[in-house]
Length: 112
Length: 116
Image 1 (cartoon, chains in turn brown, blue):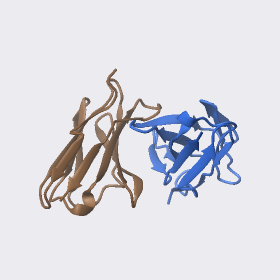
Image 2 (image 1 turned 120 degrees about the vertical axis):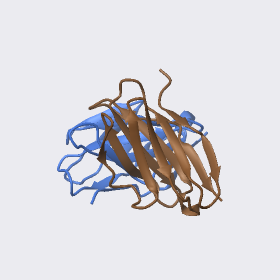
Image 3 (image 1 turned 30 degrees about the vertical axis):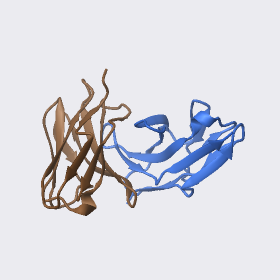
């Protein structure tokens, strides 16, 4: 079991560019969560899917951020027109229906 | 809303001494949230340390304990005798169940340094 896989591990973008972050959940897990960690805001919930359906996106910024889960083997978080304040570590986690969340290593996004 | 507070950002404890990391929570969306402690060891990812889903119960793992106290809305993490290998960042979290595994609301984290 490789655990939750996140790619890339590091991404540097210029202001105004698009960034797409990938997450591959643990096989058999039905829920995928996205979180963001910054020094100022700490660990924040963004959104999650269960059985590929969006359940709660209450933590997602209203503009420029979107998440999808086109199949059970991966989810993407897309940030359009990246801004310096989007710089953070983005964490993906997966779980079985009632199980604990297993976190990936994170993607460190730096917006110059 | 829902929130978790950890009052200590950093704690330094001598090896073999006892430890308490404070955690209090507040919730308006759920009467009985699940409570968790997560840990991030240096160079590693975030991992579950322990969880308690029933008020009044105690969870334990790796010598750490935490009791879910609904009256004081607290979930303090304790260990009787810390070791250098316990040096890590500890996060208290509240789970807001929505018919299955819940989104987590995290505290700010407490960095524990154990000195020899």
